[in-house]
Image 1: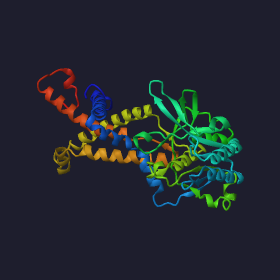
Image 2: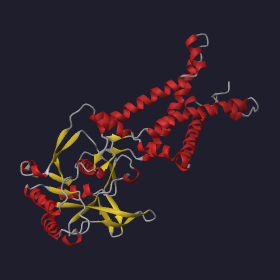
Image 3: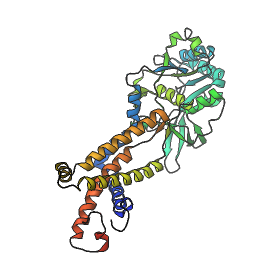
Image 4: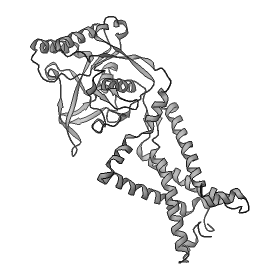
Length: 393
């Protein structure tokens, strides 16, 4: 401490580096040791944005979207009825239709098959049909096959994949993918294809993934019986057709269980201009290092300051109980959480602070280990490195 400024003392740097080492060890053990897999899954299932969305929706009545409507086809299984429904929706002159139903293979009802094929050809110029990418090969980072509607190739309809990110792990759906690789080339996601068809423009950023903005908006759900009654509302809207009450199409989301078509609706709403910016992971690591260093300096300065006056009972209590680092951890965590909340609500930017909060806690543990090690070694060895430590009196 005599040879360099307190703020830039090497002890602070070594303690923070030790915290990163502890984080690496804990991460390896948690994610690589088989019996700890449930812990790893629990960590993956958590995101600070989930909490913010819940706060955003708590006690509020969502505003109804003026751009997107949903037609529920849960109770329709007959293809001829579905074909008629699509024709009725088209007659309401929506700006774009997104059919979140895959009509896989031919059924015994040949009339229904043919009618559905005809209607698909009639509405293809302003419609997007769902498909599903399958058989992912991790080595080449691409899908080798797809499940498509039986008429897709013959009628040359526009398709978009409805695969949901992290769906295989049953984690909350937070991310919106815009493009994935397949054997035949890049494939556009369902919400991206809908927005491109609606706007008539290429989105231009297909290689990126987005956070879905589950903002306080609702989407009017219309039953097949009410199509004509809602004709004025459907005009010039994006109309998504899918199942709202089918249990097999329910997925976890930050707002609880939600049908796939509603997740697609929020995805479309996000791409229409309600983007959430996620702070890149590399910058979170940089921020974690900087803030952890500042946190360590603050802890050391406060501990040294409160311990100077040995005649006061308060100073003695704080020094002997060693609770001050814990108090500072709580204060720093509260301030960081509030800052990230304001950034999310007002700036539309999601800063995932889980790593930073973990680093604060691990910095305290690293400090304990480093401090005790230096003090123990200094009693035996009188070298310059140990004697220059802030912990050696």
